[in-house]
Amino acid sequence: MLTFDNAPKKATNLSLSASTLEKARELGLNLSKTVDELLEKEVRRVSRIQWAERNKVAIEQYNARIESEGTFAQQVQEWLVAQGETPAPNDAPHNAHSAA
Image 1 (cartoon, helix red, strand yellow):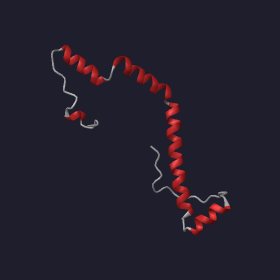
Image 2 (cartoon, one colour):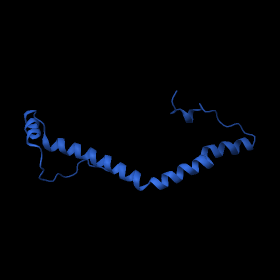
Image 3 (tube, helix red, strand yellow):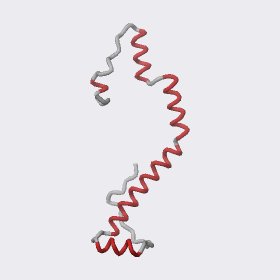
Image 4 (cartoon, one colour):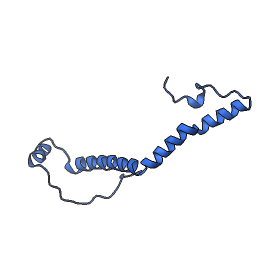
């Protein structure tokens, strides 16, 4: 996970629209803080997209395996049924996070 908390600041030059810059100053916006926060959000967004793209094949393979073999929990339930056990109902506490 990307972390930016307490990272040191570094001076840089930016080319911004003169009218936008003027309006931002009129509104009393802190340019450094605003640009830093927006850039951080964009870095996180692009990083997520790139991570998903880099891992696309592995995710597709994982999803295909789950589709064909089921999850570990499903396999355990099948084994319990084969042993004559009754698996926990879907509304058991371990599944409390599901939508009601």
